[in-house]
Image (tube, rainbow, N blue to C red; front, side, top):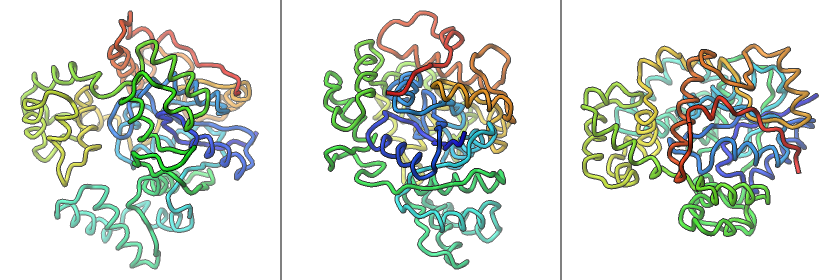
Length: 410
């Protein structure tokens, strides 16, 4: 069975994702689709608008055959580690032939060349990157400028690493190169709605950013997004809203976040992952002067530290992820287990093949002691459930009870 891999958040799943899914299968000739999907907290350092289980249902009803959870520590990391965690999962389960991702450029040739050159950073590139950081540039911009200069000097022109999907796509190829993976990458050009675009300019395609804005500003009107998402997404969003589980935003976590921050000293805060260069003082001052999480983020961000970077810092505080823990896990090694969230009938067959070929364990049920990184996923899911507006009984145990969703595509 030939399968294509997708790396997704589906926050929420919309018509652009539906188009990408269809084109991915068509371009690769795949019989089945495997999606690595972020859990309840995402790469921008924010909670998903609905739970990973709700988004898994959206994916399966779309036609995805096997959904695997990207561990929380990868899902909430910078683009390089996010990509490496996801690509290493697809590579190590042993049943994925191709990887299809969206990009602004729609051109994979320069990405392949760039990935081969930068897979192992040369001293010249490292010098350029450090120079940009010394000038106060945020890391993504410093990396993009250093890469542009270095690649141009090596005859690779037109490398656009200042756009979000291009950045992720390039990091996927970096990871494939570093893993010496046999997975073949292909890309589809993103059209009609930019990654960060908050306004809607097309009758059927809107960015997830724009849709989340509608869902948070018009909480009683899920139908407002009907024209931009598959019917299954509307059904799931409506059910989650009626159950008090949609939309989930940072403000749902305001009390536990402020409670933790206001108990910490600056020295204690500095032990958390990504809190560095004196940001502990800025975060504490922002926490003391803010009434909402949004105010705190706006107050703390700067030219050097973007909103996403600040959000990831706060998420590490919320989830109690410290530098020593990250160091012990060594994320650059990649994924060391695969948690299955759902599958179709075809996905069940694929899962059986994966159990024979996978280089890492595949978990369909969780229990204590399977893997210390999985413990972070379980703890994060419990915290996410506690933030629902409705009372949830035994949120910590819920993750132990859940088995993969089994849904036939519509």
